[in-house]
Amino acid sequence: MMSVVFISLFNVPVFAATGETATTQQQQKIVNVAHRGASGHAPENTMAAFEKAFQMKSDYIEIDVQMTRDGEVVAIHDTTVDRTTNGTGFVGDFTLEEIQQLDAGSWFDEEFAGEKIPTFEEIVDAFRGKIGILIELKSPELYPGIEEKVANILMERNMHLPNNNKVIIQSFNHESVQRSKELLPNIPHGVLAGMSWADVTDEQLLEFATYADYFNPNRNMVDEELVDRVHRSGMEVYAYTVRAQEHADQLFEAGVDGIITDFPEYVYDFSGLNE
Ligand code: G3P
Ligand code: CA
Image 1: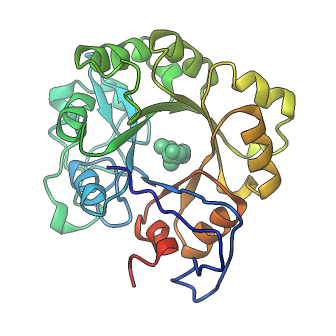
Image 2: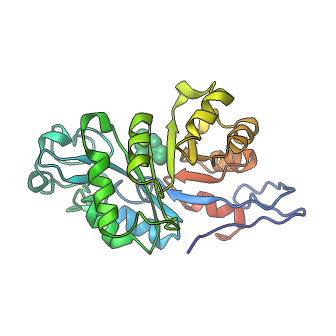
Image 3: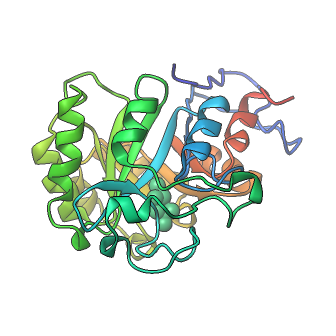
């Protein structure tokens, strides 16, 4: 179920959490994407964080996927395990069996001791049909063939077919996005844009739009003008990463289509659902 928030045509208060009032002349829906799961509440890229996002009724979980030495696709953000587990070393130097022996929860809170680095297949099997999945191909240049691995896992489950609109694939590596789009033409794809793209031109946006459906920027570059230009190019905008209510409010005002956040509750506050 899509948790779409409809803001109506007249003077409707939308900034419930801040006490501010705003109006909009158009209906606007905001897609709520839980960044690495509800990672403000549970250790990122673990089943606990994804389950929390589901409980909080996010529309999507965002996951970062990389590959082990033996070719298994797993969810972890950094290219080393150092920050988010009790181990050390590069993701690509571990076998699946080795990496799954690490504790991916204690660093966040003892309550999550024993959480493991999940495989992409585990995540898909646990959550497809329950919540959307925004898949980020993380540093794919380190993992030749990861686009094919991800595509095969989705195709084995018929998730590559038209109208399966609850899966999106994105990357900062735009060549990887293009490769993936060729393998999975019916799945929407997004280009991630860090601050080096702050001055993106209309021509560059139109080029992205030849293979991407989303231009997903760092929130610091987002204003109404950028959102309008992306929309005119035919793409949607999911901005990252929100960790404060005021930043969610600013993105809402700029007219983004989706907000990628560690705290899903900041996005629902537009509707007053948390009151
Ligand atoms: O989904 C966008 C966002 O996740 C990109 O940044 O570093 O959190 O993967 P990062
Ligand atoms: Ca990510």
